[in-house]
Amino acid sequence: MMSPSKNRFSLTHSSGSNSSSSSGNNNLKVRSRPRRASSVGRIDLGDTVPGLGTMFESKESRTAAQQRMQKLSEVTKNDLDLIKKIWLSFREMNYRHTWITPLIILIAVYSAYFTSGNLTETNPLHMFVAISYQIDDTDSYAKGIKDLTFVFYYMIFFTFLREFLLDIVIRPLPKLLNVTSRHRSNRIREQTFYIIYYGFSSPFGLYVMYHSDLWLFRTDTMYKTYPDITIPYLFKLFYLGQAAFWAQQSCVLVLQLEKPRKDHKEMVFHHIDTLLLIWLSYTFHFTKIGLAVYITMDISDLLLSFSKTANYLDSVLTPPIFFIFVVTWIYLRHYINLKILWSVITEFRTVGDYTLNFATQQYKCWISQPFVIVLMSALQILNLYWLFLIFRILYRMVWKGITEDTRSDNESNDDSASDETSSATEDATTLIVETKKEE
Image 1 (cartoon, rainbow, N blue to C red):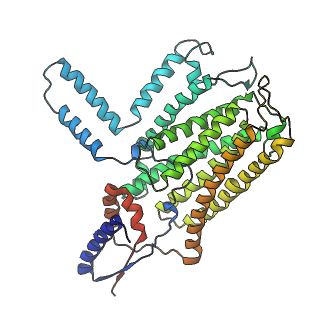
Image 2: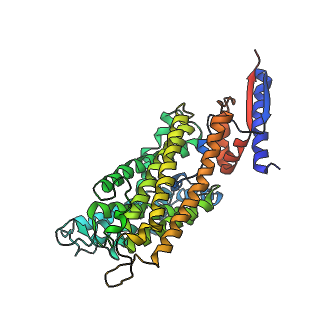
Image 3: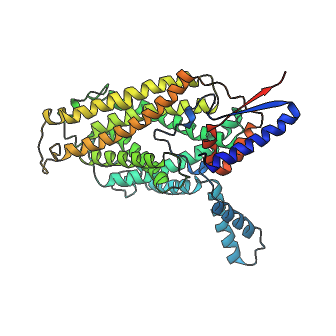
């Protein structure tokens, strides 16, 4: 049975089409299968989480904003009323531009640190803004509790960066691309941010891997030098930066600061599993395994964002980009990750020391191996679930064929109206409305 949201959308769409039919002599034909330029954009897989600025706006939020504006319009009688108005103005500005508060925190901490005249680790702010535990004057860095403060601070940094780019830098892009639908505009902005981020993190990760003994996902060296108690500066910067990025995404996702999407449970599970892998690999010195997994996820997510963006734009490049994405996804998320998982099952025991020694921080033993296998297997199972969705879309593209949507010119209005019921926007794609003009 069709859900109510689908029925509401189909009636609205049909009504609009019928009105145009009476004026333009159009015949409507409703089918039960979706037909779009591509359905790539409907796959909410990978590691993308909507930003705060593009999150679903609840009725309560809109009501609170209206109340603030009403209070601001009232006459100021005394200094206390003025202070209240300043506070309400700040709250309203922060409501409209979610990057303001993170920016204030960043400016305060950076200013205090760089104007202190002490940029060494003796400065208590150093642990927030810079990498800690440098060993003498070498390029090697140890690990410790201060690394958590670095991750926490750069969670704030990534919150600012993401919301600022979405709100200021990327906002004009959909308009330049002639996208009028608010829903598609938000999705394009979100995916553009991920293209920017993964476009930086992917080559950065490959650079770090190239200057290590892991190049091209070599697995035996993951265990030969274990325990890797110290790591190079760029290796540590990349690792902790990624940890901050993933932790920031997880906060938005788990706390449901944005409206949950269809695969919300899978995304929560994915982020929990990934954060556990990050924490355990860093704490127990399996960072070489973590680096390889980071890279496989970043590159595949970069191509996923390109595919979604092309699809939202109804670009003719969508199919080739999607095929490249599928091949890359299979190679990195399955072949390489299964290769790493197999090395944990085999080389984990045979290459390097295999014993438990707390004094030397040697944790590669019979206790840690099952944990790594379970977490890597869980990640692989979730990737297989997403691969099933990918193959389903690929099947529709190749064997069933996906023709261009010939909906009426009111498509943008329909898409904009569907923003009020965001889930209906996705569900409505289960209908095809083909309009044929009589000659």
